[in-house]
Image (cartoon, rainbow, N blue to C red):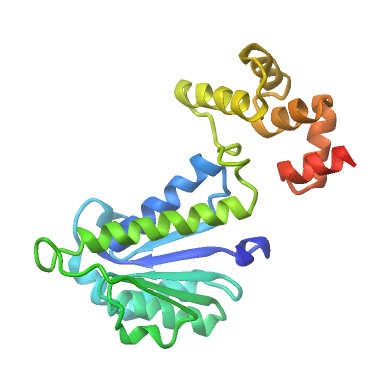
Length: 244
């Protein structure tokens, strides 16, 4: 959160299942929270091809991980390394290069005793125990890592004001299902009738946050939009401004 508020980025570097989960988490933040796509950047050993087909030897290339980090990581960024074993060379190379660039580093793995815990700023070592099929870390280890990633990115979005209570007020309505969800969110958040919520959304040109601020505060859409602009697009901040 500190990195994003300072205009920096969050990077996920991973290999295999761990890396794919990082790509998945980053990809889902824009449609769910309307976060800028450059906020969370996922890097996968083996590149995009490795999302669909295992490229197992790519994870052994620490120099590639270091080179990718050097190319894109900058001082003030946050870099999260994702590896079930805690010793994947591609990930460790990326973390070392990121530290050299002045980024903060996190290692998320399923090995509480990983030696690589020492150099990073934050270590999350999950004790998931033996896998159902020995050695297949896509199972328990992968599931646990996904839970942590979801918890982390969701908490960041909450702290950045991308929700109102537990409602996704920054979602992007790109299809009929999501447009219906947007309307139901507005009704739940304000307690108004559905036809009133629909009119407010129309008046706000489909902008849920503007419609929400307008309905809750009782001001016109133009005033709601101006209050959001003055409060860094934060609903609670805009409502506080309008109540003062």
